[in-house]
Image (tube, rainbow over all chains, first blue to last red; front, side, top):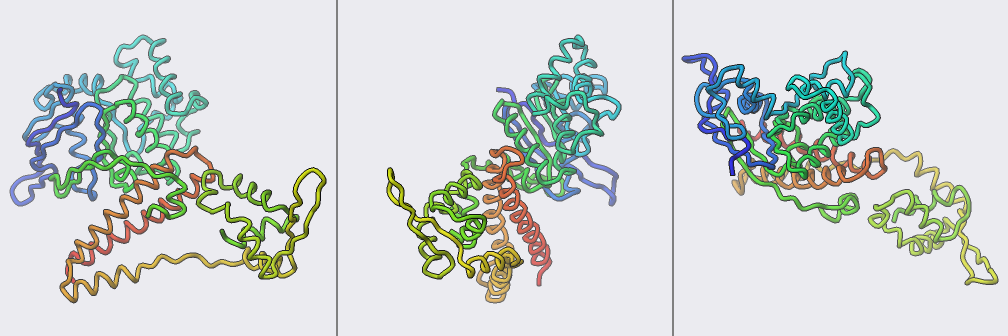
Length: 243
Length: 171
């Protein structure tokens, strides 16, 4: 089966000579359909650049990027824009919602831009907002929502065109502890629904709850491990019986 | 089970043991097991021996007689002390710090490897606690408790980062 996303010998360099910065340095990575991967590492390790290359927001210096079986590192900006619209959902640390639009209008916007008839786009947006637990916030503007709610709207928007892969850059970076749990719970539901997910984060909780964790250092992949999925009950944790 | 909690439950009014147990179970939900609510009668017996509660038998025609527990003056005083007490469990970081220092001095083990194993264990606990928190409804008592567990493990992991930096540059 084709990988949802595959990068081979991927490199992104800035500057030249002694000032050369290898933001991404010879990275090979494959994400299978339905898999969820968290990429961790200190700030400046190249993880955000890697995510932008995977989603066609930026072009590599060398190497290949494949999304949904299509090679995107040599295509025109216009072709990449189309590919992003059809196959990639982006979620950012600071939400990037349009303040003058309501939650449901924010979510339906990418569907309208992709040519979906307005009634169908509205229905898709409504269904997604219900799925992320915001049925009672459809007509609220971003300014009337909490951080966790805004990020859930942003995730619903990223999903409205049914992307092959959802790419999230520090999605819990601006959230407090309870809102982080809201977003991680939503990612968990998306995982169970088979949504392919790549999350870049330096948040320990986001990393600890992933199925697979890759760590980056100085532009290169350092580790790539699967994490166990056994569960412990709240009572066991609070009584310290499973420490 | 913590004696002070039982005393505090009795501060409002005298109660039967099974009533106290039911009130704790309601307050703690799935956690009451961890709190050992089944130990209620043992705890009440100890409290009575220490003179913090007294009990009287309450006879009834159609069921076995029950004991009603009531706070004594000493018991009431203990509840007041407990409510104003501000002690807080202190995490023991000295022990781990000494482990690193001694291991490095005696060339017994690489401090960075010890930090790595410790981090692995804390990440496992963080995963367990965060997953358990995700399984609880927002705003529940249990999720609030688990948030505390999660935040503490995060603090320990952040401290391990600081240890790694310090030992990484050589000491």
